[in-house]
Image (cartoon, rainbow, N blue to C red; front, side):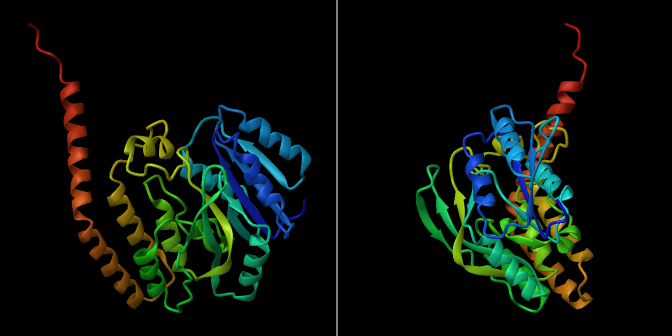
Length: 304
């Protein structure tokens, strides 16, 4: 197909039971001029067969399969790297979108050059699709000053849904994308807010599914989280809090904003790091303990 206006990236890993619903919710959009890029992160269940079936039936779908599990963030990034549209939208393999989501979001972005992202109000749903909660994101970031958008996002955000809105590809391409540390999706949204405004559609057209197998489930279980972020433990990311704050500072440094705005945001980020000192101190203790254990295990044993 010719270059589409919209690219939809659907990263997936072992979602044979739910991915059909997610794909159908994209194929049933009233806006039809899109490509759907599916990146299968080396699934071991029936996900591959389901996705290949859809790709054979609809020319808009391109299916890719990773040789090994590269971790959630890198697989999300890969869907964007393989896309070609003027606009981009991530679609999680267990969430759903109402039929008018893409059409209404694109209308907002085409009408407002200052906007870089448009998302819809959220309904939290259970594993069986039944409604649980009308969630309020409160991130209609239409302030002119980048510093005000950035600070309001970090002071307000709860569950992260805006990364499944429709985004200008040119703006997304300027960011550092998703990183391997936990909550890097918030880092990405904060950086995007430095490049333009966020608009919230008043309709509840995004359906966030909460279930025990979701990546956002049991966020405090670090062992589980690291299997999602770095399944092969190949990158050794342990200082998640430090990486998060450093990534905020780097986003501010690279942003096309005035030095006055940057100074406001440097102070804001550093204050947040100070407020987060207990978690950062705990991370350092954990790292020191890990190093001590490695040193002890590497020492040759004395002969008895």
